[in-house]
Amino acid sequence: MKKKWVVLAVLPSIALFLLFFCFNLLLKYPKVSSPLKDPIAIEPLRNTQAQFSLLIGILTRPDSYDRRHFLRLIYGIQSSPIAEIHVKFVFCNLTKDEQRMFIALEILRFSDIIILNCTENMNSGKTYTYFSSLPCILPRRYDYVMKADDDVFLRIAPLAFSLQPLPRKDLYYGFVIPCNSRNPFIEYMSGMGFILSWDLVEWIGDSSIPANDIHGPEDKLVGKWLKMGNKARNRFSNKPAMYDYPGTNGQCSHELIPETVAIHRIKRWDQWLTVLKFFNMTEALQPSNLYHIFD
Image (cartoon, rainbow, N blue to C red; front, side, top):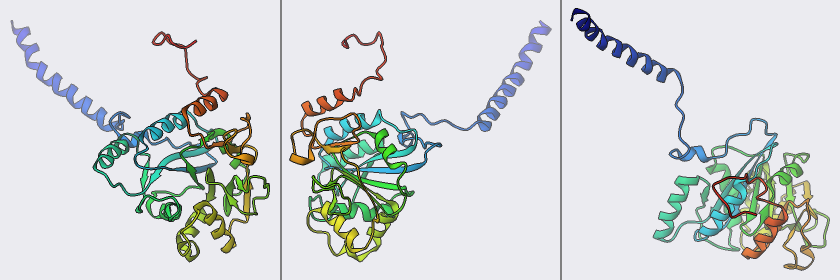
């Protein structure tokens, strides 16, 4: 009986010791946030081996929910071993209650949206607002910034490899218009997706040249600004790796090719299917007993 009482007497002391030990362990090791609960955790992890960084801003409209979710799949399964690449969806101020609710949910879940202080438009300054706002609103700078349409398919790894040897400053990269031109210094880069180095993004925000000329075909205006400001001495037109979907735009179109970087004017689901099958985008899908519908 005496031994039993001794054991009972020391049990509280043992419990306190274990509690103190576990508490110290919790203090010693850092907390790990669950990616399901922490919206910051879904931001792409920084690639410590990256040679450069690129922000891809996909200009779209608030109501294009289905297109955004689809593009998240397209870009969420791609990466580059040489570049840190972030993809954001960009549009102007929200105007409807449903937009405020649904897009707030998107931001909480994906943290990949930029809402510009402008009224949604086609040729009245949205591109200017996009570039000029970035140095003020982003928490960091990038080596390059891309403006892309939401009907373009970008292949992230080939895009990064095409940028690797190019200058990090005063760069203007894309698909030169007119379609039959190979000279990137004549005319301008197509809106399918063009890239500016960060110094040019800052210049657009600081210079009076773009600020006083924002109405009109916006991609053409960007080329005009750079010419007037004697900027973008480093230019690169990535033809034939960038092009419009076969049969959609005359000389800007050609057949799908393995070295593709970007395909523009993909408007219909059957066109997306053709593109994704051509590049075997589901080849990484692993066999599993959970599904039986794949041949």
